[in-house]
Length: 230
Image 1 (tube, helix red, strand yellow):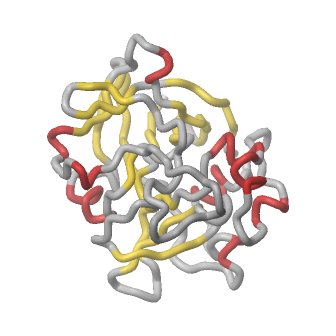
Image 2 (tube, rainbow, N blue to C red):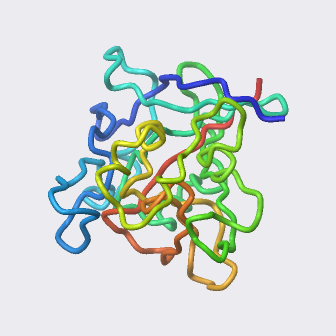
């Protein structure tokens, strides 16, 4: 059984020696080609492509300034805690970029003296007939983000409606998970395409989307999961 613990602050995102504050507008960073609705301002998620060198990026210990600490939804299952970032931490980063340093299947990290395995959530490899309904297989995205766990934030029916509107941005579930206008890479290759990788979000909390393994885009990025054995 999976238990929802709640929202916790832990660690920070370090770039070139500076801890970055979590994005205050955690959605698509360039609206010149695609804009969810008229009047939206560009997001401010840090962009990996501006400095595509992993030696300059890392997850670090919790900074003294609480406003710069990352937020995580924490779940407990089978003697482990699963900390899922409440928003994308980085955009314009490809699945291949993440895989090259171990962030897809799992990389060992120490934050605040605690041991973690940092990886991507599973997201399924085949979409439902309606992509707003997520994947056909059981997966962590639909369980954790999709609200399948007791007491975890749950989306409303309106969160799954098209097209995107300001109501999506303001919805309670989006304020918890920040899926609006932000497509998060997940671990699996898509079943129907060798160079395709599954990403979730943007149009709705469980929306199923596919992009090319080595593409860097303004609306697709990194939302890590930290796995911690108790």
